[in-house]
Amino acid sequence: MKTIPIANREFIILMTIALLLSACAEPQPQNIDNACDIFSEKKAWYDAAISSQERWNIPVEVTLAFIHQESSFRANAKPPRGKLLGFIPWFGRVSSASGYAQALDASWSEYKKETGRWYARRSNFKHSADFIGWYNDKSARTLNLSRNDAYSLYLAYHEGRDGFKRKTYNQKPWLLKVANKVKQRTADYRRQLASCAVQPRSWLSRWMHFDFL
Image 1: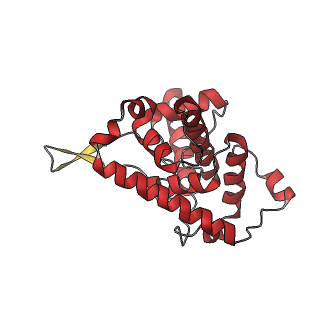
Image 2: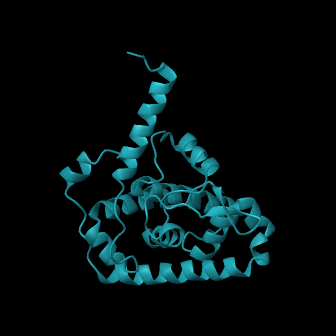
């Protein structure tokens, strides 16, 4: 019987793991426009959002509004594929953004290096919520932005901090409208969360939910 080379076997194993992780991705919440409904359905997400807020001091409603805008809470969201000559579908995607937070490859690598979370996956809600907290914390500190200013934080998230400093967003009227949507969504989520009592999972359940899951 012909033996499969070690390199090929490693590739097969990695592909199998990737497929299994993809298959285990959580489904989108039924009502993504209401924070209370989201956390009522996904109690583990509430724990993750609170954990990110406690670690990075970025409000839960800001993180939720970012995820709503970036992926509509879809674990495996990716940007559309590019088009050759403007109309012929092409294999490559327009960017390397992926997951709940639509984090780029470079930003995600930087996040894992700085936080030591080498196991973090963009298709994991907990990891993505922590990434958004981490990114916005750096933006708030380096750009002197309010941690409640979802409008400015989103512009820095989309354009990068250097782009924000250069005010590249002023040449993108559509982006300013999107940032306003994120600002409004943040306000909506804040109001909703103030009117509902979300119960976290039991201490045992949270203890058993290891950080790499």
